[in-house]
Image (cartoon, rainbow, N blue to C red; front, side, top):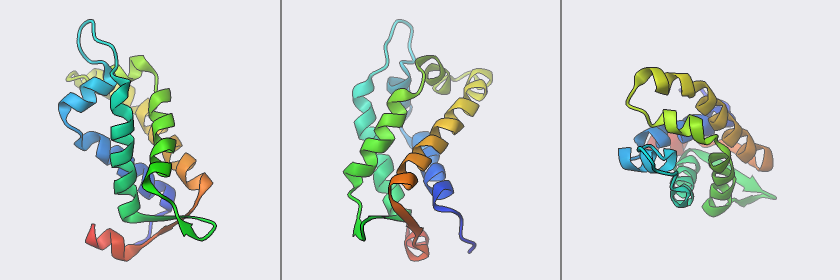
Length: 133
């Protein structure tokens, strides 16, 4: 197994987790329905789930102590809340053309989330965790 940079592991984990969310959760985040607004109260839940998945694969430390999942979740939450409403709407679309058009912005958001987490903490991939996860 080859080692990938922690930022890439975090980015992949965040992206995969979003895609694994229920259709309704993605639609709530995106505000995907005629006349509906984004339900941003779902963002902390999504961020906590993403943080838990990240910490299954990547060890994050702050001054030699393990970083708590809630701390990582807050950083992810900030990035998810900043994602533009119009693009979020398209991410949840059933229309492949619309979803693909928004994918570049989403990829950039996932990269920002990964960088925000890794920039603040020492990140190391624990291959034993990756294999068992």
